[in-house]
Amino acid sequence: MYLHSKGNTLRVAGPGDLMPGGGHFITASFIVNHIYLNNPGNVVFSAVLDTDVDADHVLDTGLFVWSHGSLRLVVRTGTFIPGVGTIDRLAFFASPLPPPGGVNAQPALSGSAIINDRGQILFGGTLEGERGVLLVATPSP
Image (cartoon, helix red, strand yellow):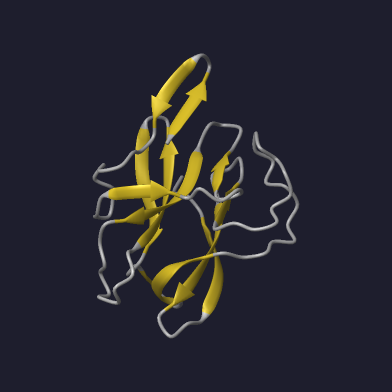
């Protein structure tokens, strides 16, 4: 995965890269609307990892943000969210929300995450026990 901005092409993540939170990158989402870029240049994407933390014979998934040369984990398989539960996998959702206002501002018909210009990320997940949730991750000031 690469970002081309202001005449420069920057590598965001690629096969074999060690990812924040553990595991190595296998592939990013290749489905339309699963990779987002906002106006400040933050990239949010889902990825398949080479780990299986819950031993269910399904590779883990993670949600990541690349911002100003730094890659950080938002959530991944096995993440415990207090008051919510443990993420089993990222999930897809149909969103009635208006476009996120980013560079690729098309209607958010489906996806695993949307990022706005404040860096807040709306994402879907399936918890252990198969309960679906929509959550918002807000970056620290």
